[in-house]
Length: 174
Image (tube, rainbow, N blue to C red; front, side, top):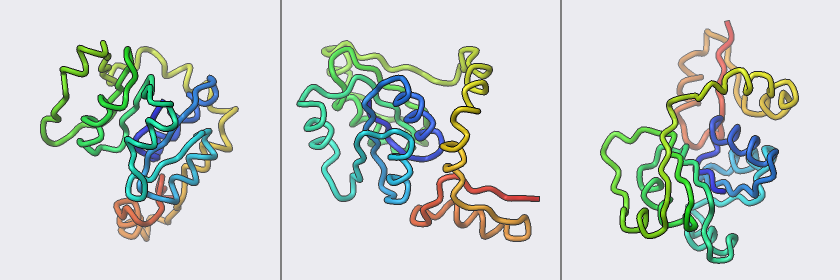
């Protein structure tokens, strides 16, 4: 499977998928987050700024494409590209909302019998997720990369918004 984006949501998806035996590829432009992805079970990490994402995914999947793509980056072009990276009968799970409509190649969707699954209905999984956290505490703690006192809230927000800060999850303490 492929996860676009190594933020907190992407890393939790990576962790759960890897714990269930999936081979996980993580695509992320931030090198610090790519390092974190390895701790969350990523078998492969790709920085699309320095490598051809399509080429690397097809090399890793031996030209077949991936069975599942989780799009957590918020980059509309990746949602479109995901359709091309899926194997026949693959599933695209977009977890982000683009400000503009995202073009999808429905010729490929129909030809390859792809499924695009919405994600806002939590499907009564909250209890199951909470119960799984104690065994994942060490990894979940790694999501917090920066902690600021409330007096430095402005700096905390600036760090969170800076794509080059290496921030994954920024916490403000009171």
